[in-house]
Length: 297
Ligand code: R5P
Image (cartoon, rainbow, N blue to C red; front, top):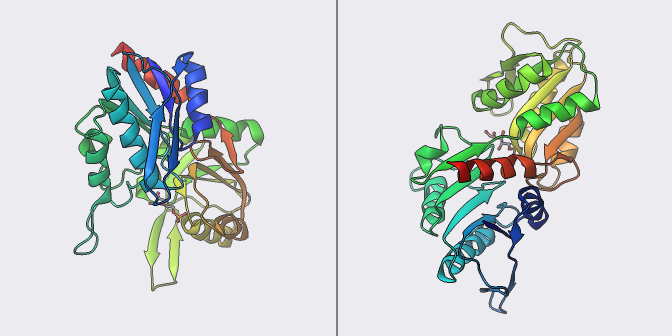
């Protein structure tokens, strides 16, 4: 096996290769003046399994084309097969046609990855909402890994929590809150939102009261920060003490950090699937173990 680190978070690809103690086959890529991509392998491609890493941020379209060029060229040049490792697999939020005429991006992107062709994929805390399992999207073996246990252990090492509650901002995040709860030895609850209008939302924690307690919000993505900010603000209004947030993919669109911080989030930890100021959890070991498990299978 050898590893090809795609341009979407190349340092993470290299760390995965280091954890696997495998060879790295690098490539050069650039844009022609008209915007087309050029790509070339400068070393001989081994007749072996290629693990191509690609975190699809911040240019998901361009990075997806790069992935397809990499996979097809590797196979042309003699690689046995290609495993796609996507620390951040974009496009999964558009998993349905919410309005007539919309593209169902999650399905289209999964077909593109399959047709590269890719023999198996590994992803991390994929946004699975209406689709519950990656294997409902992909017709190749697909494994969804999680950074949440490592994020919870990191939080534990950074502070002492007072009577904590792990809070999932919505039903989809319940899976992540359930992973964090046993590590932090805390109860987990799923927020119930009642909307009274465009801007009026009440958030209910059921039987649990946030008053005077530490809150640990757990979610897959911070993009605009709107979800976490809204939830944090409501919890603060109900008397929550410190608010921590464990997020796998910190995309931080412009203004996101200011938004969540203004809403009362004091402590943020993300993984390094998309590098940012709060990336304190390394996911290379999680991917390296999953690649080894694939080989054993
Ligand atoms: C949505 O269901 C996701 O799990 C995240 O909560 C959402 O994508 C976060 O986006 P934003 O930070 O823009 O609210």
